[in-house]
Amino acid sequence: MLELLPLLAFLLIAFSIGSNDTSNAFGICIGCRIISVRKAAILLFLLVLIGLNLQGSRVMKTVGENLVETNVAISAMALMISALIVVFTNIRGIPVSTHQVIVGSLSGAGIAFGTQLSFKTLAEIVISWILSPLIAGILAILLLISIERVSRKLGVLEFEKFLRILLLCSGMLIAYNMGANELATAIAPFMATKKDLGLISVLGAVSISLGALALSRRISETLCRGITSIDPKTGFSAHFGAGICVYIFTLFGMPVSTTYALIGGISSVGLVKSARTVNFKKIQEVVANWVFAPLIAFSLAFTASKVYFGI
Image 1 (cartoon, rainbow, N blue to C red):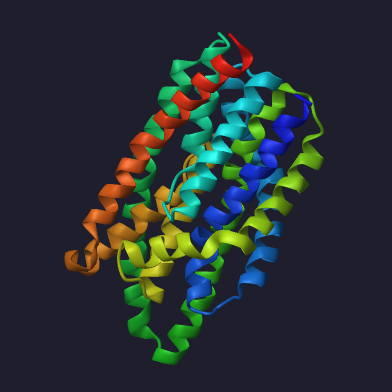
Image 2 (image 1 turned 90 degrees about the vertical axis):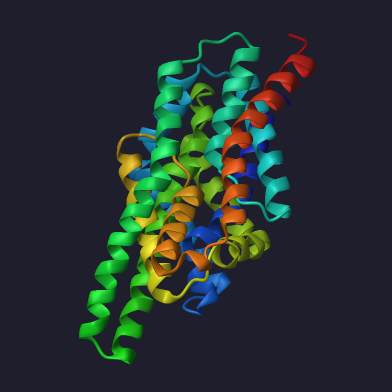
């Protein structure tokens, strides 16, 4: 039974990734009626699998090997705690980073079991978490400036069609990153269990798609309307800036949050438009989540491991 817990926990957290992060990839596209929820879920399934198989190994190595030595018990506890936290926050409509929760849970469970935790790797990951929203914001501003220049050279209708295509493409890039970075982080603990990662990858992609169909709308409202007003120009700039940012960190094997990269992009373009359009209270809530989510995950995983396994 113990050996099944990591798989069950993984499927739950993959479902949570779909319910939480589909809005990151296609939330604005769905809101602008560029694509339907059902088509977005299918496209997400394909792009997640492609991203995971082409470039997911780098992030998997960082989290599954370099951060902490894992075993079946650590994997089960870390993923179950992560899934419960992400599902709870998703139901409450709170954007939270799956990466931070998983890294916090793995670290807590690992220390509870007395395994070696690499503080060097942990520091590199935390620095990446800090830098990614800032870099995404800078890229989003540069893209917004560029897209404004292009809009002046094209007719209104022609530019609108062009921008809708770009917005869909930027969403596809984020969906690809979900496989190469987000799902790779969730699969990382399985590297110690020697299970069939190919089958786990497919099951994870299916669970993400099911989660996308079930629970994604509420988080989409928080991201798109809660922080600042979004139009196609700012939406594309924020999306593509976040997508490029996460892809860069993926190349270095760093598990960074698409959610927070996108929030960094949305906030930055909102400030460029007008500081009045930015909900600073909502940003403060997001920052608080950013700080407390990994700490809560660490504490719960550490305590649950000690109590459940009697160590």
